[in-house]
Image 1 (tube, rainbow, N blue to C red):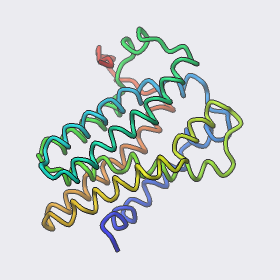
Image 2: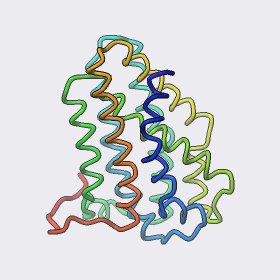
Image 3: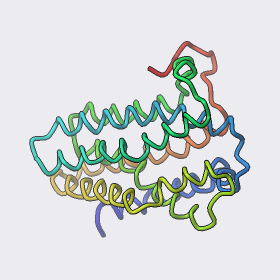
Image 4: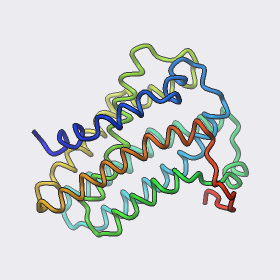
Length: 227
């Protein structure tokens, strides 16, 4: 069993919670409230920007051209697929730069990205890759499963299509290959740290759905905005 297969097995329960979350269920049925999807998109914009920066910083940590290329391919894939599609959604929904600037970063969006920055701060490309992987892989599985019946809402269907394409599958395979390769280069203790980072990210993916569905706010409403 490969290392990524072992990771996937350990995360199965929490991934199941994500897939059964009412956010995705209602997105598929077309009944998801527009304000929830709007809130999700704005928070996801912040998340994806940090996600891309972490890839770039991780690439800068290594002198291995092959590993560097795999990290950078993740950035390229984000720019060509997810971020580009989100820009179309923002235009259709008339989400303005002013709205983005004045929207608070939700606690889960902040904590999830802070977790990945924490893994990056260790200087370990292996731990960083493992923490980044659930976002790719879980969304691929979600896209493939939701594509079975699709969504009656054209906008939500386009969101599903983002994660059910050959291009996206290739991006996921690249990141799995990266994680496998790095796992072979580290000791047992470091592989355990990779598992921990992967599982925390998996948990945060589930919480991200809940964050969107509940329009999560900071309890004391501090002035924390997307920058």
